[in-house]
Length: 278
Image 1: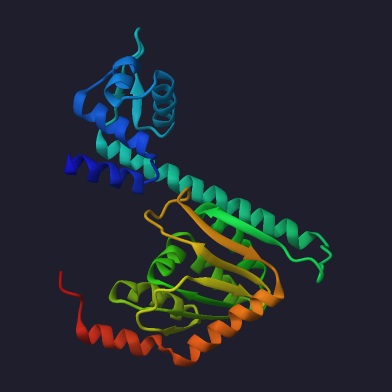
Image 2: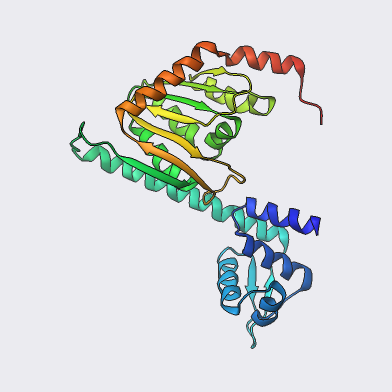
């Protein structure tokens, strides 16, 4: 049972829902089935099984038979995992492409900024955060400040934030960041230093993370407990372009900045200590 739970957890890490992971595992263990016995075994409705099977077929993880009644069989694990990874990569590329298109359209428009009305929006998934953050970084002109826990730093690498930061640096912008730098983050922090970002270490930081762009646009955590780095992972973050809130976050950032130490110094300490014992 424990092995089943671990297998299902790894499948959800790749973007499958728990129902999809359970059904796929059931087909792997017990062989091809029709919807009715699947519904009975999984203690759900045939309609629910049909929806889940359709989704797994689209992901390339289940194949239907051509005879009647239709039997559904699990694709072998290696092939199925490759299909799941390709779908996730395709979704991420599509989102990045739409982001670039939106940025180009924004450059062509003559938007009239308003200093009177601020926008406040709750972001409810990783996909919404990425879809909001990357265009803001790409449109930033001066600086990007961020304060993050370790999970937030890993998040930025997986979902293309660092690439957007690189573009900002190439346009002459400035990036300063603060994190609790552990051994597992060394490569990511080095990649940030390589693009010219100024990063510092604040030991044992466990607070919420936030980013401030050009002292106006802000994205800050409300309730973030990321279990899986996938686009549909739920969370709660606030986006606003309120300069008053931005001033508050900037002052918080500067307070931590004064107490933090350079990332290069922290990395050297970690390399001297060696990797943590497991």
